Image (cartoon, rainbow, N blue to C red; front, side):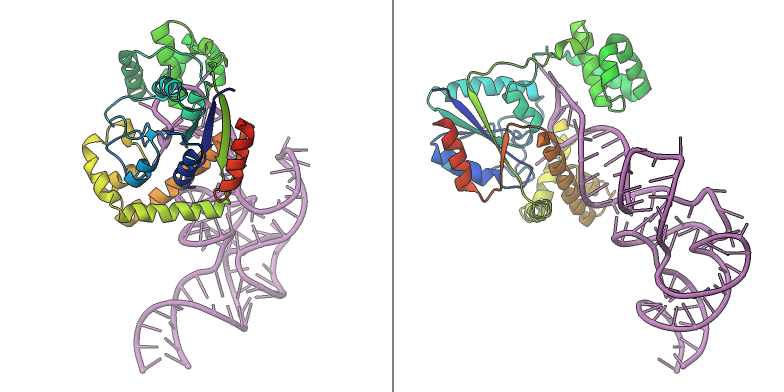
Length: 300
RNA sequence: GGGGAGAUACCAAAGUGGCCAACUGGGGCAGACUGUAAAUCUGCUGUCGUAUGACUUCGUAGGUUCGAAUCCUGCUCUCCCCA
């Protein structure tokens, strides 16, 4: 019998954490978190990491395992995940992965191609080029280095262009050449379950959860993150809005309102990401028994 | 009771005779995205819709005009000031 990676995914605030614990307990296994912000040990209330009590119930991995000052990407996650899953499958037939970071989940599923690491100096160089000379200049560079990709990318999205340029320059060959859609083979089965609910219900949950975070001291946590605000890890809903408030750009109420709105928009983007994934079996978070049945039927 | 201001699409708010289906902002909807992804980027938001297209809108009922969200009159409602 093949091992199975059970994935429980869903938009922010829908209730993955509790459900994941129940599922993990049921199958007597451990949880691999796949939440790109719960990785950071300096943040907790704004990222809604599982509570100490929850962490005690089931062993969690990749919760606050790195620092906001570390560089971490989907690729790093893929490597860490590969190593960990190999270890866990030695003692478990099933492992549960839960989270809401679509790209990272895809990475764990082996859906990203093997692409060399980028030379930090090269990254620096193109970032500067973009800042100093603008979008048009990096577009131009891309049209020379990788005309194929130039035709396909969203030319208004500097991040896409920058990434391609970095790869072109560090590897000496066009970025598009690495995008073979071959992915990586995994030696375990993947079973995806998704959580979804009525939009309005979700949005109300999100709004309420933000209020709870505020009560738990999100403002203080954000203030303590001020020294790290330039790190990418702090370009995060719940923190960036408070930074604006601390800077005097907006009122505290406005910051809270923006945190709610940006969380809603984030949830929307997550749902768009998964909308085209035919492998996901969808459930309402209250359907715990149905989810357990679904998983049990599949792995037996 | 007297005087003044105003009613515009989901909300806020421009528009004050034709270039208006109506600026802009918010909210919302839809989408893209193979390595910083809670990031980054895009489209739509009166209805029908392939539409440079048709139809119905700017409190309400009339009127003026070739033509009105814009001008005039009545009505309804809201707000402010004086009593």
